[in-house]
Length: 153
Image 1 (tube, helix red, strand yellow):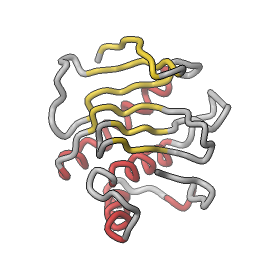
Image 2 (tube, rainbow, N blue to C red; image 1 turned 30 degrees about the horizontal axis):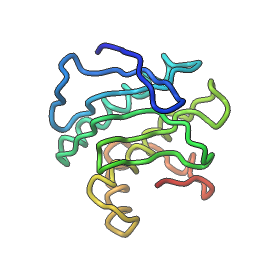
Image 3 (cartoon, rainbow, N blue to C red; image 1 turned 180 degrees about the horizontal axis):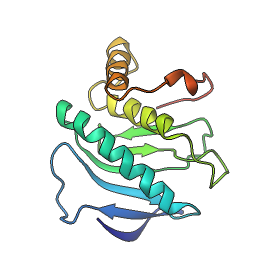
Image 4 (cartoon, rainbow, N blue to C red; image 1 turned 90 degrees about the horizontal axis):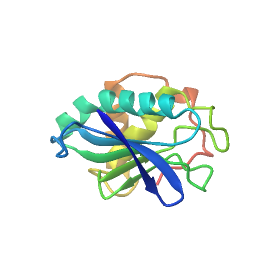
């Protein structure tokens, strides 16, 4: 992987891309972490997420062009899928606390949620069924961090 500086509005971030510019099918093509305190840890978290979801993406024939960290103004927003996998935006840190990262399992679950949009647009029975199936592939305790105050779009 090579790193380069880039930007998204007023939030600069660091891009980590595969050695070739083209993206293989069923993989995460690029990873971006916000350029702020703890950027190295954010990179590692995103790299680990990408490794964990690769078999799932291959099985479902999904591709994510850009997996990146966001810090949205909506404090309860944990993730966002743009364009059915063109971009997966994931909040890695608690709001206004640069060094306070969410537990990896919660970040992975948020990523699963966002991946479901690659197949199902609205939150319906099929969406939640797929999300539950993804959670079973890599077991963890969802109840450890479930909270009705958190939202996904």
